[in-house]
Length: 397
Image (cartoon, rainbow, N blue to C red):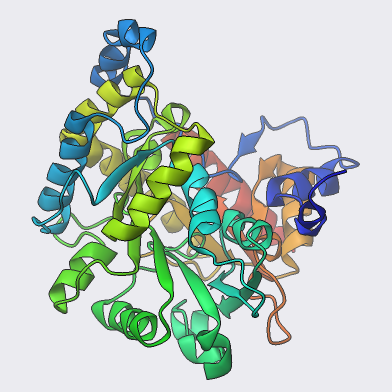
């Protein structure tokens, strides 16, 4: 016997595409370049690994689910410095989590009511598949807001009827967007806040890509700063932040959530039973990481180099745009996205992710169709080589 809802989960996009590629042999004249998975591959800063090594002795004690006071204060200090929000209480508004993936999934299990009435979880489309899985296993139904180039990849809240919004209990927002790279404006945030207040749903703001951007003078606007700008408090708002992309430590599984005190009180209770306390050594390394911006700036500089090389190489061959932020290129393909990705793998041994695997059919369209997500996570020489191969491939289509 098992939870019948598990049967409603779809395989992860990477698993689906691996199945598609199984019968295809890549051109062995080229070394594989994998740009399909959003796993940072820049070097982890030495001061973070040193902090991890120097704290190993602390694993002799059980950590608390709430995390250390020092870690929560480090997160609150970062929020103040980065977002200009200074009234965050480290005791009640912040909770460390083992990476945003785990937290984004578990969060739905806390805020969904499990009532007999229709219950919906709204999310962008295409999307991070954890959102859909969290909705399904929370006993709710996913509702999708299509992201289209014609609308600059903004969520059009009017796509859902008022009757649907009345039954939405949770809205996932990804800002900057995965895979589109769109950064939300103050106006977009205020529209969501107004709907949240009117229909009493919770906003889960996934901001794990917020520290990868291209203009040091204009960092992406986050939910906390947007709420402050319009005089709103943290009611029904929880923001998810991560060190994985910011500090190149995906294996540390370290992040935090910040927001509504009452919701986080329930989330802490859930996580206490869930056994999800953060490793004490990881907590110490996280304090070091949140407290330093020099390595983050260097990280952004490296992405700037890669995007410049990649887009400059491909611009003469195809219409390709810089994202607002994040490390993905959301490229339109001249043919079906799956066929494009298959051919690129077979002929040039470059792996990118078909966009249709990241989306669902809503209102008769899958907004991921005829696009591929290209993660510029490899070293600059690899991404430059990948761009040259894609340019050569485009000549054959």
